[in-house]
Every structure is written in structure tokens, then in C-alpha cells.
Amino acid sequence: MAQKDTITIGGVTIKTAHNFHSNYREKSPVVAEVVSGNHKLKSGDVIICHHNHFYAPSPYFLEDDLFSIPFNKQIFGVLDNDGYLTPLNGNVFGNRVEIPTPLPLPPELRKTYIDRVEVTDGRATKYKRGETILHKKNAGYDICYMWDGVEKKVTKVMDEMIVGVITTGKK
Image: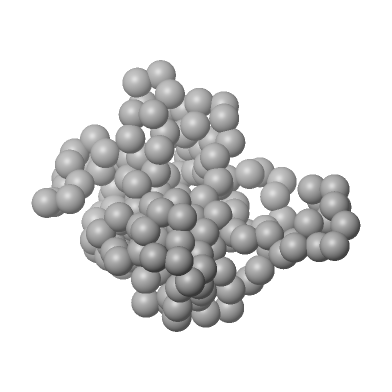
């Protein structure tokens, strides 16, 4: 449990928590290795899931660092050998949409909408890469992780939190 935010497999280190980050939505996802899988996950797969499954007293705790967690939307995605996170269970991945301003701003002053994401991966959902989806306010959950020293970030939205798609009028 002391290492639930970091795992090293085949010489690649994956880390989810930023030790000094103040945003717990970015600090809290958990990286886990699948011991026994199902039809979607196989033994040895590395997944990123919600941290609540792993806090004591967790009903999913078996022993040591072994948990039996349900296969549901709280398993956000599975990592491939290149560090790409593929969404699972109706989760949609994307990037937050920046609020336009009349003048250019430095990165630290730029803001994003709290209700929309541009889809990068909507696998197994009806949402396609490049679409801008509207979701319930603050439903976007930022997943930040380090893959072999490189920071990666994606915003996850559960499909049932999506309320619409912004269309451009083109077909």
C-alpha cells in the first residue's frame, strides 16, 4: 500500500501521485497490476483506477497488497507497453478545452471550461476522437501519471456524465 502510486514493471517505472501537488484529483489515481483478469483484462496488465478502492477499511482488501476490486467504471483504463492509457468501462478520455481570450495569456493564467472535453479516445462508447463533448460541471477527472519519467495527462469523463456534443454544422 505504501507504493500504490508507483510500480516498476520490466524496467519501466509508472508513477501516478505528485508528492507535492495540491489538486487531489490529480494526486490520487492508483496504478495497479492485474493478478487475475477477466474478458477485458489479463494477468500482468497495468491499470489506473480510483483510489477509494484501496483505502482502509476497504471491502476489497484480501491480504498484503492484494485486492479484489470490481470491474466497473472505477477502473479508468489499461496501460499499454508504450504508456498509452486506453479507456475501459464507458470512460471517455480527452483534453480540457481552453477558454478563449481576446489577448494571448501565459500558460499559468489560461483557464479551461469545467463542462467540456475534446475527445482523444472514446473507445467502446459512441464518442469519437476530435468531438467536443459537454458534461456535467466538474465531471472531468484529471489523470496524471509519469511513464518512465515522462509526464502524461488525460481527462476522464464517465459516459453517463456526458450531456451533449458540440457540432460544427458540417457533416
